[in-house]
Image (cartoon, rainbow, N blue to C red; front, top):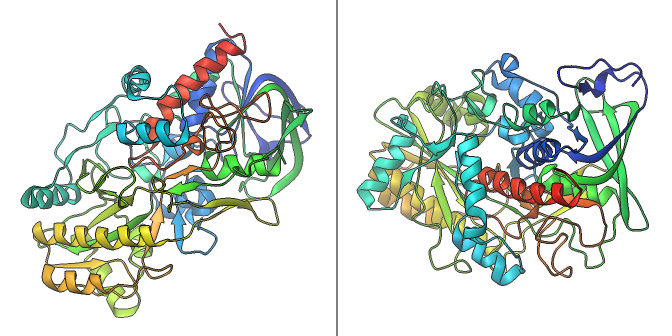
Length: 525
Protein backbone atom coordinates (compact mmCIF):
# COMPACT_ATOMS: atom_id res chain seq x y z
CA UNK A 1 0.00 0.00 0.00
CA UNK A 2 3.05 2.25 -0.18
CA UNK A 3 2.35 5.68 -1.61
CA UNK A 4 -1.42 5.36 -1.53
CA UNK A 5 -3.57 8.13 -0.22
CA UNK A 6 -6.92 6.67 0.76
CA UNK A 7 -10.05 8.63 0.05
CA UNK A 8 -13.33 8.18 1.87
CA UNK A 9 -14.30 4.63 2.78
CA UNK A 10 -11.20 3.02 1.38
CA UNK A 11 -11.12 4.60 -2.08
CA UNK A 12 -7.74 4.68 -3.83
CA UNK A 13 -6.83 6.61 -6.97
CA UNK A 14 -4.50 4.65 -9.25
CA UNK A 15 -2.99 7.85 -10.63
CA UNK A 16 -1.45 8.42 -7.17
CA UNK A 17 0.21 5.02 -6.94
CA UNK A 18 3.92 5.29 -6.10
CA UNK A 19 4.36 1.51 -6.03
CA UNK A 20 2.75 -1.63 -7.29
CA UNK A 21 -0.24 -2.73 -5.23
CA UNK A 22 -1.17 -6.21 -4.04
CA UNK A 23 -4.52 -6.94 -2.46
CA UNK A 24 -6.48 -10.03 -1.50
CA UNK A 25 -10.25 -10.37 -1.52
CA UNK A 26 -13.05 -12.86 -1.83
CA UNK A 27 -14.38 -11.19 -4.96
CA UNK A 28 -13.01 -8.58 -7.33
CA UNK A 29 -15.59 -6.74 -9.42
CA UNK A 30 -14.49 -5.05 -12.64
CA UNK A 31 -16.65 -2.00 -13.26
CA UNK A 32 -18.87 0.15 -11.07
CA UNK A 33 -21.90 0.69 -13.30
CA UNK A 34 -25.37 -0.84 -13.18
CA UNK A 35 -24.06 -4.40 -13.00
CA UNK A 36 -20.79 -3.98 -11.13
CA UNK A 37 -21.91 -1.62 -8.37
CA UNK A 38 -25.11 -3.51 -7.69
CA UNK A 39 -23.21 -6.80 -7.53
CA UNK A 40 -20.47 -5.33 -5.33
CA UNK A 41 -22.97 -3.98 -2.83
CA UNK A 42 -24.85 -7.28 -2.57
CA UNK A 43 -21.62 -9.23 -2.10
CA UNK A 44 -20.15 -6.80 0.44
CA UNK A 45 -23.36 -6.72 2.48
CA UNK A 46 -23.19 -10.52 2.57
CA UNK A 47 -19.93 -10.19 4.50
CA UNK A 48 -17.56 -10.97 1.63
CA UNK A 49 -14.36 -9.02 1.06
CA UNK A 50 -14.89 -7.09 -2.18
CA UNK A 51 -12.60 -4.96 -4.33
CA UNK A 52 -14.12 -2.83 -7.10
CA UNK A 53 -11.92 -1.83 -10.03
CA UNK A 54 -12.97 1.21 -12.07
CA UNK A 55 -11.12 2.65 -15.05
CA UNK A 56 -12.66 6.10 -14.65
CA UNK A 57 -12.33 8.69 -11.92
CA UNK A 58 -14.41 9.25 -8.80
CA UNK A 59 -16.50 12.29 -9.68
CA UNK A 60 -19.19 13.55 -7.33
CA UNK A 61 -21.99 16.12 -7.63
CA UNK A 62 -19.67 19.03 -6.83
CA UNK A 63 -17.52 18.04 -9.82
CA UNK A 64 -20.37 18.22 -12.35
CA UNK A 65 -20.02 21.62 -14.04
CA UNK A 66 -22.81 20.95 -16.58
CA UNK A 67 -20.38 22.02 -19.29
CA UNK A 68 -20.40 19.61 -22.21
CA UNK A 69 -16.70 19.92 -22.98
CA UNK A 70 -15.81 19.00 -19.39
CA UNK A 71 -18.32 16.17 -19.04
CA UNK A 72 -17.58 14.34 -22.28
CA UNK A 73 -13.86 14.34 -21.60
CA UNK A 74 -14.06 13.21 -17.98
CA UNK A 75 -17.16 11.02 -17.81
CA UNK A 76 -17.36 9.14 -21.14
CA UNK A 77 -15.43 6.41 -22.88
CA UNK A 78 -12.94 7.89 -25.35
CA UNK A 79 -14.18 11.40 -24.48
CA UNK A 80 -17.59 10.58 -26.01
CA UNK A 81 -15.92 9.89 -29.36
CA UNK A 82 -16.08 6.07 -29.25
CA UNK A 83 -17.19 4.66 -32.61
CA UNK A 84 -17.67 1.31 -34.25
CA UNK A 85 -14.78 -0.12 -36.28
CA UNK A 86 -15.96 1.47 -39.54
CA UNK A 87 -16.51 4.84 -37.75
CA UNK A 88 -20.11 4.87 -38.94
CA UNK A 89 -21.82 4.68 -35.52
CA UNK A 90 -21.08 6.77 -32.42
CA UNK A 91 -21.27 4.84 -29.15
CA UNK A 92 -21.91 6.79 -25.93
CA UNK A 93 -20.79 4.95 -22.78
CA UNK A 94 -19.91 6.16 -19.31
CA UNK A 95 -16.37 5.92 -17.92
CA UNK A 96 -16.51 7.07 -14.33
CA UNK A 97 -17.54 5.69 -10.96
CA UNK A 98 -21.14 4.69 -11.49
CA UNK A 99 -20.47 3.99 -15.17
CA UNK A 100 -23.21 4.91 -17.59
CA UNK A 101 -25.69 5.29 -14.71
CA UNK A 102 -23.88 8.52 -13.81
CA UNK A 103 -24.51 10.04 -17.24
CA UNK A 104 -27.66 8.35 -18.57
CA UNK A 105 -31.03 10.04 -18.98
CA UNK A 106 -32.70 8.06 -16.15
CA UNK A 107 -35.18 6.17 -18.39
CA UNK A 108 -36.25 2.90 -16.76
CA UNK A 109 -38.28 0.04 -18.28
CA UNK A 110 -38.76 -3.54 -17.19
CA UNK A 111 -37.62 -6.17 -19.70
CA UNK A 112 -40.44 -6.85 -22.17
CA UNK A 113 -42.09 -10.23 -21.81
CA UNK A 114 -41.53 -10.81 -25.54
CA UNK A 115 -37.78 -10.48 -25.03
CA UNK A 116 -37.66 -12.85 -22.06
CA UNK A 117 -39.81 -15.37 -23.92
CA UNK A 118 -37.50 -15.25 -26.93
CA UNK A 119 -34.46 -15.79 -24.70
CA UNK A 120 -36.00 -18.86 -23.11
CA UNK A 121 -37.27 -20.36 -26.35
CA UNK A 122 -34.37 -19.65 -28.70
CA UNK A 123 -31.31 -19.18 -26.45
CA UNK A 124 -32.04 -21.64 -23.65
CA UNK A 125 -32.02 -19.07 -20.86
CA UNK A 126 -33.49 -20.54 -17.68
CA UNK A 127 -35.11 -18.94 -14.65
CA UNK A 128 -35.71 -15.48 -16.13
CA UNK A 129 -39.37 -15.34 -17.02
CA UNK A 130 -41.37 -12.24 -15.95
CA UNK A 131 -42.54 -13.96 -12.78
CA UNK A 132 -38.97 -14.86 -11.78
CA UNK A 133 -37.78 -11.28 -12.23
CA UNK A 134 -40.83 -9.46 -10.84
CA UNK A 135 -39.67 -9.34 -7.16
CA UNK A 136 -36.21 -8.21 -8.20
CA UNK A 137 -37.68 -5.44 -10.34
CA UNK A 138 -39.96 -4.36 -7.50
CA UNK A 139 -37.09 -4.22 -5.00
CA UNK A 140 -34.87 -2.19 -7.31
CA UNK A 141 -37.69 0.19 -8.21
CA UNK A 142 -38.34 0.87 -4.55
CA UNK A 143 -34.64 1.26 -3.77
CA UNK A 144 -33.95 3.69 -6.61
CA UNK A 145 -37.19 5.65 -6.62
CA UNK A 146 -38.20 4.35 -10.06
CA UNK A 147 -41.72 5.51 -10.89
CA UNK A 148 -43.54 7.29 -13.73
CA UNK A 149 -42.51 10.92 -14.17
CA UNK A 150 -45.12 12.92 -12.28
CA UNK A 151 -44.56 16.34 -13.81
CA UNK A 152 -45.53 17.93 -17.09
CA UNK A 153 -43.16 16.90 -19.89
CA UNK A 154 -40.86 19.50 -21.36
CA UNK A 155 -41.79 20.77 -24.82
CA UNK A 156 -39.47 18.31 -26.56
CA UNK A 157 -41.35 15.38 -25.00
CA UNK A 158 -44.73 17.09 -25.29
CA UNK A 159 -44.31 17.24 -29.08
CA UNK A 160 -43.85 13.46 -29.15
CA UNK A 161 -47.00 13.00 -27.05
CA UNK A 162 -49.02 15.44 -29.18
CA UNK A 163 -48.00 13.85 -32.47
CA UNK A 164 -48.67 10.32 -31.21
CA UNK A 165 -52.07 11.31 -29.86
CA UNK A 166 -53.13 12.95 -33.11
CA UNK A 167 -52.07 9.87 -35.07
CA UNK A 168 -53.64 7.41 -32.64
CA UNK A 169 -50.31 5.81 -31.78
CA UNK A 170 -49.61 4.11 -28.44
CA UNK A 171 -47.57 6.28 -26.11
CA UNK A 172 -46.95 6.51 -22.40
CA UNK A 173 -45.09 8.10 -19.52
CA UNK A 174 -41.52 7.01 -18.79
CA UNK A 175 -40.43 5.87 -15.33
CA UNK A 176 -37.27 7.58 -14.02
CA UNK A 177 -34.85 6.73 -11.18
CA UNK A 178 -34.89 10.12 -9.46
CA UNK A 179 -35.74 11.64 -6.09
CA UNK A 180 -36.09 15.38 -5.61
CA UNK A 181 -35.39 16.06 -9.28
CA UNK A 182 -35.16 19.77 -10.11
CA UNK A 183 -35.92 19.21 -13.80
CA UNK A 184 -32.64 20.75 -14.96
CA UNK A 185 -32.31 18.66 -18.11
CA UNK A 186 -28.56 18.01 -17.91
CA UNK A 187 -28.70 14.39 -16.72
CA UNK A 188 -26.18 13.30 -19.35
CA UNK A 189 -23.52 15.55 -17.83
CA UNK A 190 -23.81 14.22 -14.28
CA UNK A 191 -26.44 15.25 -11.73
CA UNK A 192 -25.19 18.22 -9.63
CA UNK A 193 -28.01 17.96 -7.06
CA UNK A 194 -27.83 14.23 -6.29
CA UNK A 195 -31.36 13.63 -7.56
CA UNK A 196 -30.46 10.87 -10.00
CA UNK A 197 -30.40 7.59 -8.10
CA UNK A 198 -27.37 6.33 -9.98
CA UNK A 199 -24.88 3.78 -8.73
CA UNK A 200 -22.62 6.71 -7.86
CA UNK A 201 -25.17 7.82 -5.26
CA UNK A 202 -26.57 4.48 -4.11
CA UNK A 203 -24.84 1.12 -4.59
CA UNK A 204 -21.23 2.35 -4.69
CA UNK A 205 -21.54 4.13 -1.30
CA UNK A 206 -23.50 1.13 -0.06
CA UNK A 207 -20.70 -1.24 -1.02
CA UNK A 208 -18.08 1.03 0.55
CA UNK A 209 -20.06 1.34 3.76
CA UNK A 210 -20.17 -2.47 3.90
CA UNK A 211 -16.36 -2.61 3.75
CA UNK A 212 -15.61 -2.85 0.04
CA UNK A 213 -12.50 -1.23 -1.44
CA UNK A 214 -12.68 0.89 -4.60
CA UNK A 215 -9.75 1.41 -6.97
CA UNK A 216 -10.25 4.23 -9.47
CA UNK A 217 -8.24 5.07 -12.59
CA UNK A 218 -7.20 1.42 -12.63
CA UNK A 219 -7.64 -0.63 -15.79
CA UNK A 220 -8.31 -4.37 -15.57
CA UNK A 221 -5.90 -6.07 -17.96
CA UNK A 222 -6.51 -9.80 -17.59
CA UNK A 223 -8.13 -12.42 -15.43
CA UNK A 224 -5.56 -14.68 -13.79
CA UNK A 225 -6.36 -18.39 -13.94
CA UNK A 226 -4.62 -21.73 -13.81
CA UNK A 227 -5.96 -25.16 -14.67
CA UNK A 228 -9.42 -23.82 -15.37
CA UNK A 229 -9.88 -21.86 -12.14
CA UNK A 230 -9.63 -18.11 -11.56
CA UNK A 231 -7.32 -16.86 -8.85
CA UNK A 232 -7.26 -13.10 -9.37
CA UNK A 233 -6.95 -10.07 -11.61
CA UNK A 234 -4.02 -8.11 -13.05
CA UNK A 235 -4.54 -4.38 -13.50
CA UNK A 236 -2.65 -1.30 -14.64
CA UNK A 237 -2.81 2.02 -12.85
CA UNK A 238 -3.43 5.03 -15.10
CA UNK A 239 -2.08 8.56 -15.20
CA UNK A 240 -4.39 11.40 -14.04
CA UNK A 241 -6.10 11.77 -17.41
CA UNK A 242 -7.02 8.09 -17.17
CA UNK A 243 -5.68 7.21 -20.62
CA UNK A 244 -2.11 5.88 -20.41
CA UNK A 245 -0.63 3.52 -17.80
CA UNK A 246 1.56 5.21 -15.20
CA UNK A 247 3.93 2.26 -14.87
CA UNK A 248 2.40 0.68 -11.77
CA UNK A 249 0.31 -2.47 -11.50
CA UNK A 250 -2.32 -3.79 -9.13
CA UNK A 251 -2.53 -7.54 -8.56
CA UNK A 252 -5.66 -8.64 -6.74
CA UNK A 253 -5.85 -12.22 -5.53
CA UNK A 254 -9.45 -13.40 -5.31
CA UNK A 255 -11.63 -16.49 -5.16
CA UNK A 256 -13.99 -15.06 -7.73
CA UNK A 257 -13.91 -12.40 -10.46
CA UNK A 258 -17.00 -10.59 -11.68
CA UNK A 259 -16.67 -8.95 -15.11
CA UNK A 260 -19.00 -5.94 -15.24
CA UNK A 261 -17.23 -3.55 -17.56
CA UNK A 262 -20.06 -3.27 -20.07
CA UNK A 263 -20.73 -5.03 -23.35
CA UNK A 264 -17.51 -3.81 -24.95
CA UNK A 265 -15.31 -3.80 -21.85
CA UNK A 266 -16.24 -7.24 -20.47
CA UNK A 267 -15.67 -9.16 -23.73
CA UNK A 268 -12.46 -7.16 -24.14
CA UNK A 269 -11.21 -8.22 -20.71
CA UNK A 270 -11.98 -11.89 -21.34
CA UNK A 271 -10.35 -11.74 -24.79
CA UNK A 272 -7.16 -10.25 -23.31
CA UNK A 273 -7.22 -13.03 -20.72
CA UNK A 274 -7.07 -15.73 -23.44
CA UNK A 275 -9.71 -17.82 -21.67
CA UNK A 276 -11.01 -21.01 -23.27
CA UNK A 277 -13.60 -20.31 -25.96
CA UNK A 278 -14.02 -23.62 -27.77
CA UNK A 279 -17.22 -22.63 -29.57
CA UNK A 280 -16.04 -19.13 -30.55
CA UNK A 281 -18.85 -17.27 -28.78
CA UNK A 282 -16.87 -14.63 -26.91
CA UNK A 283 -17.43 -11.14 -28.28
CA UNK A 284 -19.96 -12.41 -30.83
CA UNK A 285 -23.60 -11.33 -31.06
CA UNK A 286 -22.94 -7.90 -29.60
CA UNK A 287 -25.94 -5.67 -30.18
CA UNK A 288 -26.83 -2.02 -30.23
CA UNK A 289 -30.10 -0.25 -29.99
CA UNK A 290 -29.11 1.47 -33.21
CA UNK A 291 -30.49 5.01 -33.16
CA UNK A 292 -31.36 7.42 -35.95
CA UNK A 293 -32.62 10.97 -35.50
CA UNK A 294 -35.15 13.35 -36.99
CA UNK A 295 -35.21 17.02 -36.00
CA UNK A 296 -37.98 19.52 -36.58
CA UNK A 297 -38.37 23.28 -36.43
CA UNK A 298 -41.42 24.09 -34.35
CA UNK A 299 -43.45 27.31 -34.37
CA UNK A 300 -42.97 27.62 -30.61
CA UNK A 301 -39.73 27.61 -28.56
CA UNK A 302 -38.76 24.07 -27.59
CA UNK A 303 -35.58 24.58 -25.55
CA UNK A 304 -34.90 20.85 -25.56
CA UNK A 305 -31.88 21.39 -23.34
CA UNK A 306 -34.18 22.13 -20.38
CA UNK A 307 -36.34 19.77 -18.35
CA UNK A 308 -36.33 16.00 -17.88
CA UNK A 309 -34.63 14.61 -21.00
CA UNK A 310 -37.03 11.70 -21.49
CA UNK A 311 -40.55 11.46 -20.08
CA UNK A 312 -42.69 10.28 -23.02
CA UNK A 313 -42.24 7.26 -25.32
CA UNK A 314 -44.12 5.43 -28.03
CA UNK A 315 -43.84 1.68 -28.59
CA UNK A 316 -46.26 1.72 -31.52
CA UNK A 317 -43.64 0.14 -33.77
CA UNK A 318 -41.65 -1.95 -31.29
CA UNK A 319 -43.21 -5.33 -32.14
CA UNK A 320 -44.73 -4.82 -35.59
CA UNK A 321 -45.20 -8.54 -36.28
CA UNK A 322 -43.76 -10.47 -33.35
CA UNK A 323 -40.31 -10.90 -31.89
CA UNK A 324 -38.72 -12.39 -35.01
CA UNK A 325 -40.56 -10.25 -37.56
CA UNK A 326 -39.46 -6.92 -38.97
CA UNK A 327 -36.96 -4.90 -36.93
CA UNK A 328 -39.03 -2.92 -34.48
CA UNK A 329 -38.18 0.40 -32.87
CA UNK A 330 -39.17 2.53 -29.92
CA UNK A 331 -39.62 6.29 -30.23
CA UNK A 332 -38.16 8.63 -27.60
CA UNK A 333 -36.61 12.09 -27.60
CA UNK A 334 -33.04 13.11 -26.73
CA UNK A 335 -31.87 16.17 -24.81
CA UNK A 336 -30.51 18.77 -27.19
CA UNK A 337 -27.41 20.41 -25.78
CA UNK A 338 -25.49 22.66 -28.19
CA UNK A 339 -22.33 20.56 -28.61
CA UNK A 340 -24.26 17.31 -28.85
CA UNK A 341 -26.75 18.84 -31.26
CA UNK A 342 -24.10 20.41 -33.48
CA UNK A 343 -22.42 17.01 -33.78
CA UNK A 344 -25.59 15.00 -34.37
CA UNK A 345 -26.88 17.39 -37.04
CA UNK A 346 -24.07 16.35 -39.43
CA UNK A 347 -24.59 19.53 -41.46
CA UNK A 348 -22.16 21.90 -43.12
CA UNK A 349 -21.86 25.54 -44.06
CA UNK A 350 -24.90 27.78 -44.29
CA UNK A 351 -27.38 25.00 -43.57
CA UNK A 352 -25.59 24.19 -40.32
CA UNK A 353 -25.44 27.88 -39.36
CA UNK A 354 -29.15 28.30 -40.02
CA UNK A 355 -29.96 25.19 -37.98
CA UNK A 356 -27.93 26.36 -34.99
CA UNK A 357 -29.44 29.86 -35.19
CA UNK A 358 -32.84 28.29 -34.45
CA UNK A 359 -31.49 25.73 -32.02
CA UNK A 360 -33.95 26.75 -29.30
CA UNK A 361 -36.87 26.04 -31.68
CA UNK A 362 -35.57 22.57 -32.60
CA UNK A 363 -37.34 19.41 -31.50
CA UNK A 364 -35.82 15.96 -32.01
CA UNK A 365 -37.11 12.38 -32.02
CA UNK A 366 -34.98 9.25 -31.91
CA UNK A 367 -35.80 5.66 -32.83
CA UNK A 368 -34.16 2.75 -31.00
CA UNK A 369 -33.84 -0.32 -33.25
CA UNK A 370 -34.58 -3.70 -31.65
CA UNK A 371 -31.82 -6.00 -32.96
CA UNK A 372 -30.95 -9.68 -32.62
CA UNK A 373 -34.31 -11.48 -32.73
CA UNK A 374 -34.02 -12.94 -36.24
CA UNK A 375 -31.51 -15.38 -37.73
CA UNK A 376 -30.41 -12.64 -40.14
CA UNK A 377 -29.58 -10.26 -37.29
CA UNK A 378 -26.15 -11.49 -36.12
CA UNK A 379 -25.11 -8.32 -34.34
CA UNK A 380 -21.49 -7.23 -34.15
CA UNK A 381 -18.22 -8.57 -32.79
CA UNK A 382 -15.94 -7.18 -30.09
CA UNK A 383 -12.29 -7.50 -31.11
CA UNK A 384 -8.98 -6.30 -29.73
CA UNK A 385 -6.93 -3.60 -31.36
CA UNK A 386 -3.15 -3.99 -31.54
CA UNK A 387 -2.81 -2.23 -28.18
CA UNK A 388 -5.28 -4.60 -26.51
CA UNK A 389 -8.15 -2.13 -26.31
CA UNK A 390 -11.58 -3.44 -27.35
CA UNK A 391 -13.44 -2.30 -30.44
CA UNK A 392 -16.91 -3.13 -31.71
CA UNK A 393 -17.27 -4.16 -35.34
CA UNK A 394 -20.98 -3.63 -36.03
CA UNK A 395 -22.30 -3.40 -39.57
CA UNK A 396 -25.62 -2.48 -41.10
CA UNK A 397 -27.59 -5.25 -42.74
CA UNK A 398 -30.70 -5.23 -44.88
CA UNK A 399 -33.07 -5.78 -41.98
CA UNK A 400 -31.61 -2.92 -39.96
CA UNK A 401 -31.60 -0.68 -43.04
CA UNK A 402 -35.29 -1.40 -43.54
CA UNK A 403 -36.00 -0.54 -39.90
CA UNK A 404 -34.07 2.73 -40.16
CA UNK A 405 -36.03 3.85 -43.23
CA UNK A 406 -39.36 3.01 -41.62
CA UNK A 407 -38.26 4.89 -38.50
CA UNK A 408 -37.34 8.01 -40.49
CA UNK A 409 -40.83 7.90 -41.98
CA UNK A 410 -42.51 7.42 -38.60
CA UNK A 411 -40.57 10.24 -36.97
CA UNK A 412 -41.29 12.71 -39.79
CA UNK A 413 -44.99 11.81 -39.82
CA UNK A 414 -45.21 12.31 -36.07
CA UNK A 415 -43.42 15.67 -36.13
CA UNK A 416 -45.63 17.05 -38.89
CA UNK A 417 -48.71 15.78 -37.06
CA UNK A 418 -47.49 17.73 -34.01
CA UNK A 419 -47.27 20.94 -36.02
CA UNK A 420 -43.67 21.09 -37.28
CA UNK A 421 -42.76 23.85 -39.75
CA UNK A 422 -40.13 21.63 -41.32
CA UNK A 423 -38.51 18.26 -40.64
CA UNK A 424 -34.91 17.20 -41.27
CA UNK A 425 -34.01 13.48 -41.12
CA UNK A 426 -30.39 13.28 -40.06
CA UNK A 427 -28.94 11.78 -43.21
CA UNK A 428 -26.34 13.10 -45.63
CA UNK A 429 -28.80 13.07 -48.54
CA UNK A 430 -31.66 14.74 -46.68
CA UNK A 431 -32.77 18.37 -46.65
CA UNK A 432 -35.36 20.13 -44.50
CA UNK A 433 -38.82 19.20 -45.77
CA UNK A 434 -41.83 21.48 -45.40
CA UNK A 435 -44.61 18.87 -45.60
CA UNK A 436 -45.29 15.25 -44.80
CA UNK A 437 -45.92 14.54 -48.48
CA UNK A 438 -42.53 15.98 -49.46
CA UNK A 439 -40.72 14.18 -46.61
CA UNK A 440 -42.34 10.83 -47.37
CA UNK A 441 -41.30 10.97 -51.01
CA UNK A 442 -37.73 12.02 -50.20
CA UNK A 443 -37.17 9.53 -47.38
CA UNK A 444 -38.24 6.67 -49.64
CA UNK A 445 -35.21 7.40 -51.81
CA UNK A 446 -32.57 7.80 -49.05
CA UNK A 447 -29.59 5.45 -49.16
CA UNK A 448 -29.46 3.34 -46.00
CA UNK A 449 -25.73 2.77 -45.81
CA UNK A 450 -22.86 3.49 -43.39
CA UNK A 451 -21.88 7.16 -43.23
CA UNK A 452 -25.11 8.18 -44.95
CA UNK A 453 -27.55 7.79 -42.09
CA UNK A 454 -26.52 9.65 -38.94
CA UNK A 455 -26.37 6.84 -36.37
CA UNK A 456 -25.46 6.47 -32.72
CA UNK A 457 -26.26 4.32 -29.70
CA UNK A 458 -25.97 4.53 -25.94
CA UNK A 459 -27.00 0.89 -25.37
CA UNK A 460 -24.48 -1.88 -26.01
CA UNK A 461 -25.59 -5.41 -25.15
CA UNK A 462 -24.35 -8.96 -25.59
CA UNK A 463 -20.92 -10.37 -26.39
CA UNK A 464 -20.88 -12.68 -23.32
CA UNK A 465 -24.31 -14.15 -23.89
CA UNK A 466 -25.96 -16.29 -21.23
CA UNK A 467 -27.68 -19.61 -21.83
CA UNK A 468 -27.55 -23.18 -20.64
CA UNK A 469 -25.88 -24.54 -23.79
CA UNK A 470 -22.10 -23.89 -23.89
CA UNK A 471 -22.21 -24.20 -27.68
CA UNK A 472 -24.28 -21.02 -27.97
CA UNK A 473 -23.43 -19.09 -24.80
CA UNK A 474 -20.36 -17.85 -22.93
CA UNK A 475 -21.94 -18.08 -19.47
CA UNK A 476 -24.86 -19.95 -17.98
CA UNK A 477 -28.15 -18.39 -16.85
CA UNK A 478 -26.53 -17.48 -13.53
CA UNK A 479 -23.76 -15.55 -15.27
CA UNK A 480 -21.10 -18.24 -14.50
CA UNK A 481 -18.51 -18.88 -17.19
CA UNK A 482 -19.05 -22.22 -18.92
CA UNK A 483 -15.35 -23.03 -19.23
CA UNK A 484 -13.64 -21.41 -16.23
CA UNK A 485 -14.51 -21.75 -12.55
CA UNK A 486 -14.59 -18.65 -10.35
CA UNK A 487 -15.63 -16.23 -13.11
CA UNK A 488 -18.97 -14.49 -13.59
CA UNK A 489 -20.28 -11.86 -15.97
CA UNK A 490 -22.89 -9.52 -14.49
CA UNK A 491 -23.71 -6.67 -16.87
CA UNK A 492 -25.47 -6.00 -20.17
CA UNK A 493 -23.06 -8.26 -22.06
CA UNK A 494 -25.13 -11.18 -20.71
CA UNK A 495 -28.06 -10.43 -23.03
CA UNK A 496 -28.51 -12.88 -25.94
CA UNK A 497 -30.21 -10.10 -27.94
CA UNK A 498 -30.92 -6.44 -27.51
CA UNK A 499 -33.81 -5.66 -25.16
CA UNK A 500 -36.05 -3.32 -27.14
CA UNK A 501 -36.10 -0.94 -24.15
CA UNK A 502 -33.53 1.10 -22.24
CA UNK A 503 -31.41 -1.46 -20.36
CA UNK A 504 -30.51 -0.01 -16.96
CA UNK A 505 -33.44 -1.42 -14.98
CA UNK A 506 -32.94 -4.88 -16.47
CA UNK A 507 -29.26 -4.82 -15.49
CA UNK A 508 -30.08 -3.65 -11.96
CA UNK A 509 -32.60 -6.43 -11.39
CA UNK A 510 -30.50 -9.14 -13.02
CA UNK A 511 -27.38 -8.07 -11.12
CA UNK A 512 -29.26 -8.15 -7.81
CA UNK A 513 -30.53 -11.66 -8.51
CA UNK A 514 -27.27 -13.13 -9.79
CA UNK A 515 -25.12 -11.48 -7.11
CA UNK A 516 -27.42 -12.76 -4.35
CA UNK A 517 -27.07 -16.30 -5.70
CA UNK A 518 -23.29 -15.86 -5.99
CA UNK A 519 -23.00 -14.57 -2.42
CA UNK A 520 -24.78 -17.67 -1.14
CA UNK A 521 -22.50 -19.95 -3.14
CA UNK A 522 -19.41 -18.19 -1.78
CA UNK A 523 -20.52 -18.63 1.80
CA UNK A 524 -21.79 -15.12 2.43
CA UNK A 525 -24.29 -14.52 5.18
